[in-house]
Length: 365
Image (cartoon, one colour):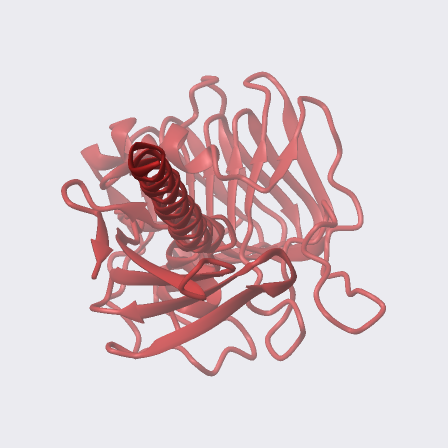
């Protein structure tokens, strides 16, 4: 009898031990699962923030300023809070706090952070119009390197240094422009080796033609026409960013902060713009023809030649590498005005931020 009772006690102890161990394993497993869910929520916040990054709004944050976004999926057992802090002119700290529910202890929290840096292309063009190869200008047109803001723009910094009206390296023929009155700047016309160097047109500081055009949101295939270019609104009055021909809008409108990268493909094609308006950065792989009443705010880069006839207006800067070996032409009543404000706004919003090279990601305890 004593032996039987002792055996029952031992068996009971073993069974209790098994239940205790199983319960502990369940607790550990459940809490680990909830901890991992919280971590995944934090990572979701970081990745979503980068994917939806808006330079136009975040570059308006003051140094030290913050903005916060909450992704609430409590029905699925998690919630995440993302805080973006601007550390200096180009660097931002993204902090993400993920919280998961349902563990033995009630909830779990994990925090991660990411350091990112905005990369702003640099266009070091010596003139309002910088061209390679032979060119002609004149008529009733005006090409000026005196820095001026686009009409209606009131949030621009003080004017920058004056550029040349036209910077070139080949033969420049003036047509119907006595005394070169259709050129203005310091100097009005400048012969420079920079205009002959293809790096001037395709290298932009830490960026280049390929790294910038890959972020283009408006892409035109060879031979495709860009018609009815101009701002477009959604039914609720907000800017319709998705519409292909919406290249931004005038100051004071819903699309005033829309500065897309527009990329016209086709090295042997010609992009013809006859009417409408836009802003941002325009890249043309072939030739660009402005033949009507078109206006644009921002920089324009052309791998081929530029031809302008009509009452076209460019506020920003224009550069044509003339790889096709033709002749650049600015005639009619064209107005090309250097605008550092239009160029800088377009460049600042062009590329989403990149992780810093070392120790960009960290877990915060």
